[in-house]
Length: 67
Image 1 (tube, rainbow, N blue to C red):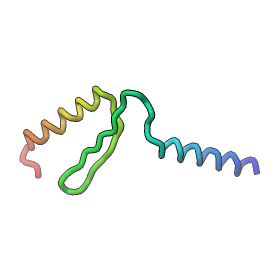
Image 2 (image 1 turned 45 degrees about the vertical axis):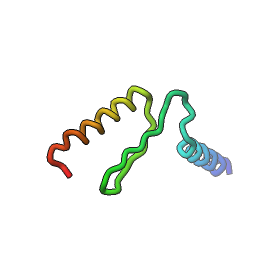
Image 3 (image 1 turned 90 degrees about the horizontal axis):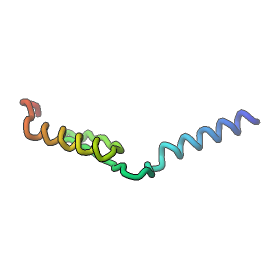
Image 4 (image 1 turned 90 degrees about the vertical axis):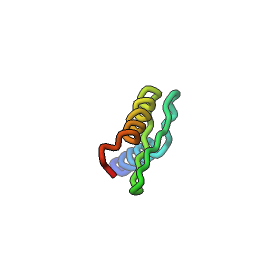
């Protein structure tokens, strides 16, 4: 019975820990999506967000013959 209770408590805490949004100050959720329907979402700080914007902008300006 003790193992079942412990397993349930661990499962609930891991589920809530990954399901709840990040509540830290200064972090922003960023979503990048492509024409083919693929996308990803991540939580980044201000510096990483600026780097992500620069990278996506560079890919848009210089596509390197990719479609």
